[in-house]
Image 1 (tube, rainbow, N blue to C red):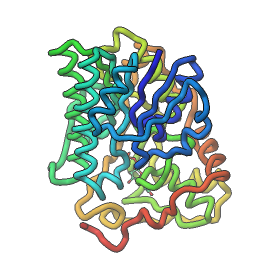
Image 2: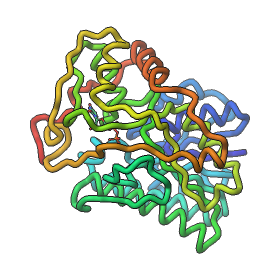
Image 3: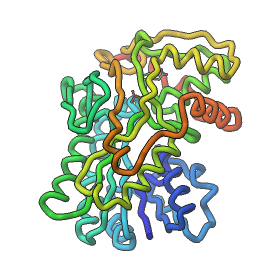
Image 4: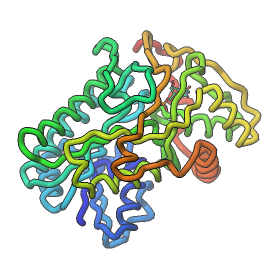
Length: 336
Ligand code: UDP
């Protein structure tokens, strides 16, 4: 198939591009290289089955042309990372809502199947677990950036779903829970690349809040395997799927494991949320996906555990540098 991946030079998009090319597909990756990086797909450049198109999902004529040429679309382009969203709320909303609208509009014009990536942020503060796809969303004020982001992704989901219900456009919704692996940058807040880089540099490991909050981390290879399988599955159309791991870890325990695995001299530094993000910031205490639906659909089961993931990311960062982490913490300006 000829596949268009929006956000194809991003962390997940670049791994998806590689996986699809390995499966024998042709890939066009559309990316504005804002959070995506050309180096992420450097190993694919020069391959006849891969094309990097530098541009935005907000450029209607470009998206029109690319969708027309494709057989199916993976829509991954989005503002991601809690820190990025808190720092640039308006830009994040526009990219997510308007970008998805344009992609879906063009896909409808040419009747092309679309898989749209959403997020576990959809569930908001719902700390029940494991969270099923039809679980209630529990959100704070829309004037808080994090909840505005959650709402923007919910609008994307509603758009994708109603394009299917009302106009018959085949769409699939996927909610990714904390996906990690090589090439993920810590520059937009993601915890594992940050802890690993801090540990390797023997700098303090910045645990936000009490460190008792927990997450489940999935290796990006497991995530892209699921995405590639879902787009082929006719029964997935009109459905939403959680994709994630169920191996739960607190941020405090994660910091300790990273220190142990790297043999680092780093100490843990607890950073209050209002210093790390903004005044009044609310975190999720817990976030565990129910993955029985995706298991039933494609036999999904994560192949990499947290230990494998950490070793893989540590190995990656021993050989690669990232944006300086100190620039990411907005210590001086809480509430701005
Ligand atoms: N976190 C942390 N230190 C950091 C970055 C993040 O303790 O340097 C925490 C963050 O507050 C959250 C968890 O790690 O509780 C996961 O954060 P991430 O941004 O990776 O994902 P999300 O918040 O979307 O689950």
